[in-house]
Image (tube, rainbow, N blue to C red; front, side, top):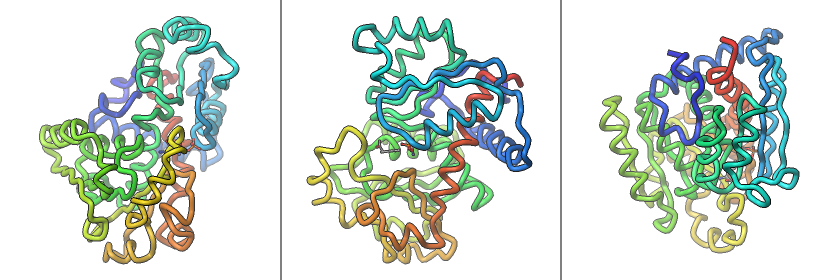
Length: 317
Ligand code: CP
Ligand code: NVA
């Protein structure tokens, strides 16, 4: 099954099946155990990986870098001000040049079209490290963390609260539909996800017959009832800083605080956040520091899942 992923891009999770997602998580777990046992490997030996960043990053950049080194590969950081991409040189030209030098390319930036063009023209696997629309490597780490806590993905009640139309919410919804979760977004109506994407995800869930459901609601308190996972993200994503004041006006009822955690009425509920967190807004310090929080396991799992993504598509397996 793993060989299906050879040479493949990771652009949104839309093109990955439930089995492929489960495979990547299983591979991530194996690689995590290998690292915890103190072993380093050669699965990426001889592989050169380009890391293009238009937006800031702590976890994603470090995860790609450390993952490559752990398995004997080399990564090269290409900050947007260091290269000509999209300024003096078209994306397709840059893609064709990088594709002749690198074995794989990570891209973080604004436009989804940009990462799709890189994939189309480079001739090597391209991994989306976050765009305005999607954040697929994040969701693999999120699901790995869910599996570590509950032993499964299918049937999990997963509730995302806050900005319901950002890159993380969009990709969680796609992933949840793929693996058969009961997924809810609780958000103010202005921040509901794109209805076309919701429709697409409902169709994915119906067609794969894993029993997944998708619900969009304004009512955070009822949404979290019996939740296994309560997830939130920042109220203004990178590039949307000017919208923060407006967001604050409508998002207070969606803050993850102890009242919302209690409303789950599930002593095993866990709190997840992709990080970075702006404490006091989307999540209180109390919840963040509580025993419900798994956000640092989740952050660590970025390393193992990103390693698995690279190994599966270009590794010496
Ligand atoms: N969660 C996440 O993508 O973190 P960074 O922005 O630090 O990479
Ligand atoms: N939605 C956030 C995620 C950060 C990892 C952003 O795009 O800024």
